[in-house]
Amino acid sequence: MSTTTATSIFLFLFSLLLTTHSKPIPHLTSPYLSPATISANYDSMVKNFKIFIYKPNPHFTYDSPVQSLFYTALLDSDLATNNTDEAHLFFLPFPPDLPTRSIARLIRTIRTDLPYWNRTLGADHFYLSCSGVGYESDRNLVELKKNSIQISCFPTPPGQLIPHKDITLPPLASPHAPTSNTTTFLGYVRSNWVNDSAIVNELRANPEFLIESEPSTPQIYAQRLSSSKFCIFEYGDGDLSGIGEALRFGCVPVVITDRPIQDLPFMDVLRWQEMALFVGRRGGAKELERVLVRACWERHDQMRRLGTAAGQHLVWNVPPRALDAFHTLVYQLWLRRHTIRYVRRETV
Ligand SMILES: *[C@@H]1O[C@H](CO)[C@@H](O)[C@H](O)[C@H]1NC(C)=O
Ligand SMILES: *[C@@H]1O[C@H](CO)[C@@H](O)[C@H](O)[C@H]1NC(C)=O
Ligand SMILES: *[C@@H]1O[C@H](CO)[C@@H](O)[C@H](O)[C@H]1NC(C)=O
Ligand SMILES: *[C@@H]1O[C@H](CO)[C@@H](O)[C@H](O)[C@H]1NC(C)=O
Image (cartoon, rainbow, N blue to C red; front, side, top):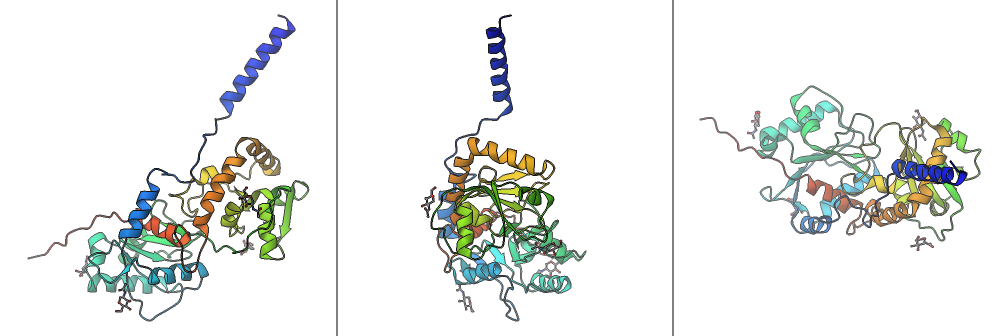
């Protein structure tokens, strides 16, 4: 066999290897999981959605800013109704520090006094609880946890979220925008120095990465995000509050995690898999860098484009604006409004 034949066979095998091993990246123009229907569904939600809000007694305030923003916006919105016949969903507000037994008592009261809970055993009800509700074998609490829609804060403590039913509030983002965006770093990590993982500590030695303890100002933070190709977050102990800003400012989020994440904000609306990378810890910093370099030439531009398009959904505005965090949350509730209502059987 001549060397040229050998070379061409080698090249042929090599290209075969490349084509079989790298899945082609589909060209996507929309950050949505259902681009064909989202706009019509959203408009229909804005026109029709009605939510009945139980009146808390006594009055209380939520302790986290995102919960307060959501609650205030809901009370002030056109979605709120006092007419239970037209309500698609029922919102049950209770104080964040209410003991589980008192929550159980609260549900027992509404189920005894009013007809709505029994119709769906709580499935058309939703509640806010940043870290989820504790376990009790009490029937009322079991129904709340199993049937009602829980809105928790992102990230939700392990075991406190039921996928497909529960949703999370996106973190509050800083309103500051970057003033320029010339890429200088492959990766950026906002470190807390105390809990940094081995992988982040290893990255410190690599000049392609900027590992910085809390940036001095929100403006500098925005600047860091817009001047890095990838923003690295650690799921678990790390601080994930910048993930929405990273998307908005064109820094593709990279989440270090060893298991699938089920509580990302707007998971059933946005194509997270096409806008963010999820990398295990096992390969260490070397593997992380390899994944990023590869993504740079394969899909960074598209991820960045989809991410910046999706970014508006992670912004909390006061008052709320179309397609922002509040409205996208309400949209997720709208998608969950179809529940079976049982006709009450009268015992004669
Ligand atoms: C419902 O009733 C309460 C008091 O009865 C009132 O303050 C509130 O504005 C009403 N909400 C709507 C949406 O009509
Ligand atoms: C709802 O069902 C429970 C028992 O399943 C019953 O005790 C309660 O009275 C019912 N509520 C109403 C309003 O009928
Ligand atoms: C940063 O880049 C994006 C597009 O890649 C552009 O839309 C945006 O205006 C830029 N921002 C600044 C501050 O230059
Ligand atoms: C660091 O870890 C400790 C214990 O795991 C945790 O309580 C703390 O909140 C973490 N700090 C940060 C900034 O994530």
